[in-house]
Length: 343
Image 1 (cartoon, rainbow, N blue to C red):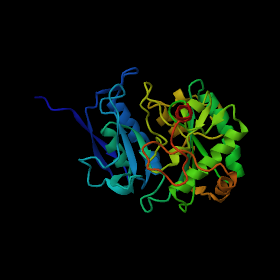
Image 2: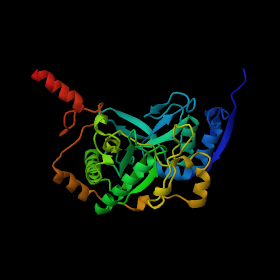
Image 3: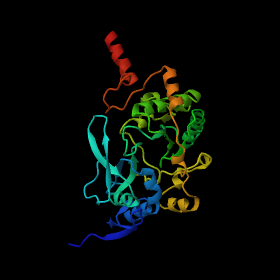
Image 4: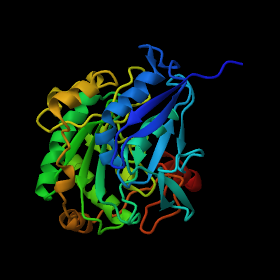
């Protein structure tokens, strides 16, 4: 039996060069464009430094596509077997109370090693290993609903920026790699997941109140309409989004790309992919290079939440019932149950 082809990649890092194995390099990962595993892993070699800075010391879930974009994908929330000795972990606690030792990048070679496992998306928690109960990043996910697209998300992002400015928060936008936009805010790790989620709800409500025809925080899809959903539950514990520089599982091998607010209106998300992004990084640098230096507080937005009076919103269905949460039943079903009881 012929041995599978293996190549050795050299990845520089803080502890010197590491050799990382690339297996099955000619496997086709993106059939529409003929992009191979070698190209995807090679992309991660090119961006390993900036991506590792995004993931550094963060417990990170891996979204793996071992058979490429046409195959079945799955999330890995624990350190995969066969990790090299320099790959480290972080202990996380899930909403159920169970714990896990999650992959925790500490140097660029670990990113490339994970990419060789078929990882496209890296999904970091918004915490660092030293304190996994207090986020240091607030994330806002602008998710266009059916009938809307990226240009709608850009319009909502403009109002979001105004709201963040009023709260004294500095937002850093990136493309999601699809139709959406993600905005990160570096915060002091002084608030719980519940507090940070409440802060995102308060921000989302302010945006939706200003442009109700374009934006919504309605959890139930039947209430969203053709608007952009500000997904506040991405701030709940154990919910993650694809990191900046992550390859997405889409036919064109698009990348979640950091951009500036000024550039955002002219962005075409499809322009950012595994073949174009390394050159853009070399030519223009990292648009989020200053993110870690712009540390903010949540005092103002939490005052907004407390003063608002509308209270909490539903959690995802797999969560235990949370304190102060409204009933977790979609409105049409609740109305049907009420009518049934009155007949």
